[in-house]
View 1 (cartoon, helix red, strand yellow):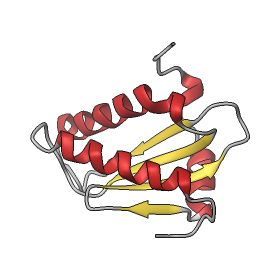
View 2 (cartoon, one colour):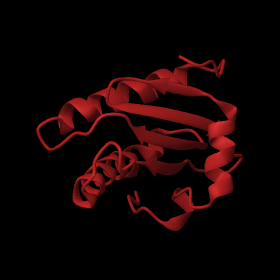
View 3 (cartoon, helix red, strand yellow):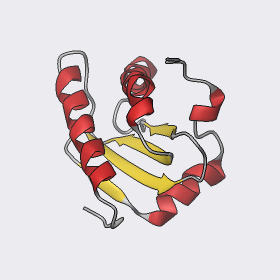
View 4 (cartoon, helix red, strand yellow):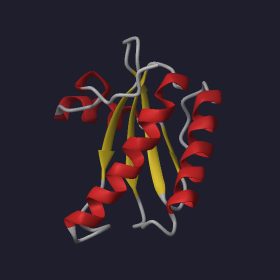
Length: 120
């Protein structure tokens, strides 16, 4: 099983991000907010948003993105073909990493079971 993170698994263009945000299918918890949209491909894709407002230092933003990418990379085989955008709401570091990943896992489990596309 390949666990790489090739370009085909990334949301890169502004239009891709805009189309996911426009559908407004989202779930939010304390640490993260997840947006979802069907993509019509055979695999899921990921986009990450970590604003400077959340963490001023680039190394902290990069750490948060690295943690979230790692989660996606190891779980993408279990995900349906959707475009996901994960927006960090609160800064976290290695002390909260396990809690953030558990929150993300619960959000994604709820998303995959929810077929109504409602905002929660």
